[in-house]
Image (tube, rainbow, N blue to C red; front, side, top):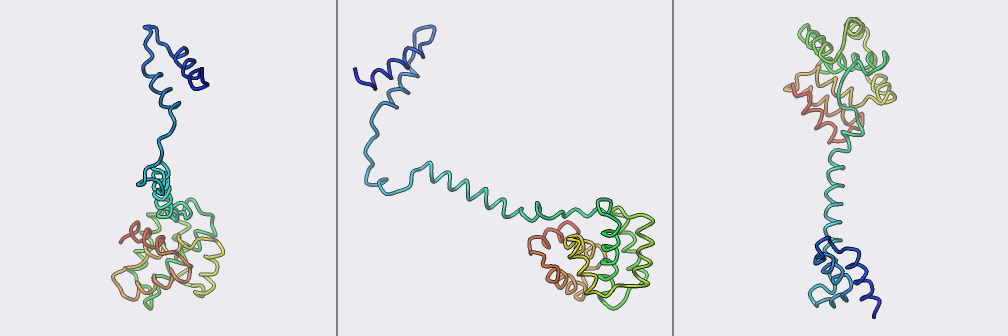
Length: 198
């Protein structure tokens, strides 16, 4: 008796059901013991179907991760309550700098910033910071440097979106400049523009 026959015999013995039937195991064992069919000319040089499926799934998973990588790498939800005092102050100053990009901050823009601060968790302290930032603005270069040092680039861009009327060409140019200056990828700014559409 060959080793293949012994193997089949053992499988049939262990797999026998109470009613004595073992068709499923017998067919499986015979399929395993049978020599593989020689490759046809059509499939001789082609990849195995299982490998094709694995590669396709891997490509899809990688593509999905790449599309969402910035949402996992960057905290894009703007909530002042999650930041320390220095971070909150920086974002207030960024909102003031954004509103001032078109040459000045009028009363309507101040009201807009105050409403935006309240919407993202700001309180009395942030309203006080707003008045201070308008009265004594930081030089833009120094402000952006501090934002980058604090790793708050996406937050600063989102805060600027909330402070601006994006229908203005000047304000849109400011946002483009800010994205470039803070080295924000296009995927990040596109996501923020969707989230904080005014």
